[in-house]
Amino acid sequence: MPSREWQLRVQDILNSAIAIQDRTQGYTYEQFCNDETVNKATLYDFVIIGEAAIYIPSTLKEKYPDIPWRMMADMRNVMAHEYFQIRLRTVWEGVEMDIPLLIEQLNELIKHENL
Image (cartoon, rainbow, N blue to C red; front, side):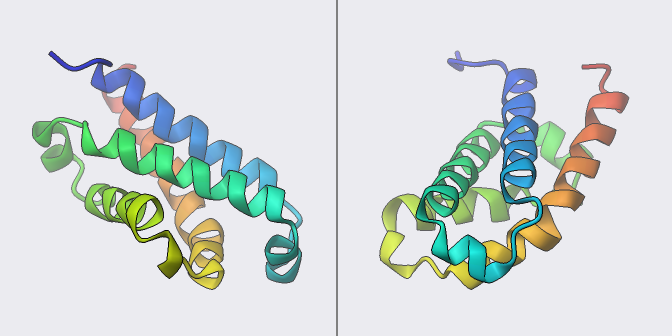
């Protein structure tokens, strides 16, 4: 039995994505790189996103294939186990391009699944 229901894990992903967006709003890439507190907090939220994504049931992943479930889990694995390979430029690109789309996709999932 999972330690946390998938519905709560979807909400965890959404909450962390929103936290990333809120925390980095108005930042430039240079500001992001120079603010260790913000970039490390952002990395932590990416870890939460990836950890929660691992436990989403495959039936739901198949129902929403455009959500990058595997990429979220892979990013978490790099951050947790291959931390020395983290490139802030790649993280920043995720913040700018992937997080807004992910928030939109998760809001649609929540609407369709009546969460």
